[in-house]
Image (tube, rainbow, N blue to C red):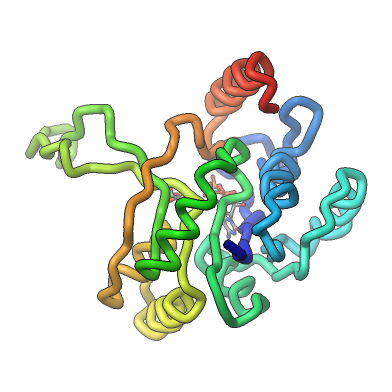
Length: 231
Ligand SMILES: Nc1ccn([C@@H]2O[C@H](COP(=O)(O)OP(=O)(O)OP(=O)(O)O)[C@@H](O)[C@H]2O)c(=O)n1
Ligand SMILES: C[C@](O)(CO)[C@H](O)COP(=O)(O)O
């Protein structure tokens, strides 16, 4: 089932503290964003990749795409000050029909077997996201004082990709801009315009590389997948 994918790659990686955009860091001798794009390059249902980038990094990224034989990038969109702005810029470039996925360049371990059920759920219900049940006990805290232990059974930690019918995602982004709303994921924009969002259960190893210790987790995931001949 065909789809297009927006990949925001225009962050600064401040929490990673590497002094540069973390998606350009190497894992297994290959830049993080190339690992991510390869999944979509190799998925026959993916019709095009729309990459949000820092214009100052475009030459470097284009050279890496060429070196790694990534051919499905249809457009580069300029990154904005927030993830949401980067994605909105890319959304204005995509073909205005069908299913659009949004996937963080900083999540290189997406399991391609999950793409089809996600796209199918979005086609059926309008919006679908990958998520995993929260494993920790979660507490609300004020200052350093616990105010509440949150009932865990209904809590899910959300990931990307997130999949949407194009018209719903565009409407959600327009409304968010009009209301000056900033969300930490794309589905939150869709929820606030009253649309349903379906959960597709993902994998705990679909981590986002956010802080330095995530690089150690990434090495472990690569080691495991190498043994299973999946990386
Ligand atoms: N203005 C921004 C901010 C983020 N991103 C992208 O959105 C994804 C998830 O964002 P996050 O993990 O927050 O990345 P950074 O913004 O780079 O990290 P930090 O917040 O630590 O600076 C990443 O692939 C990142 O490149 C983006 O395209 N444009
Ligand atoms: C969209 C996201 O990947 C869902 O987990 C995430 O919220 C984006 O990054 P951030 O670290 O929350 O800014």
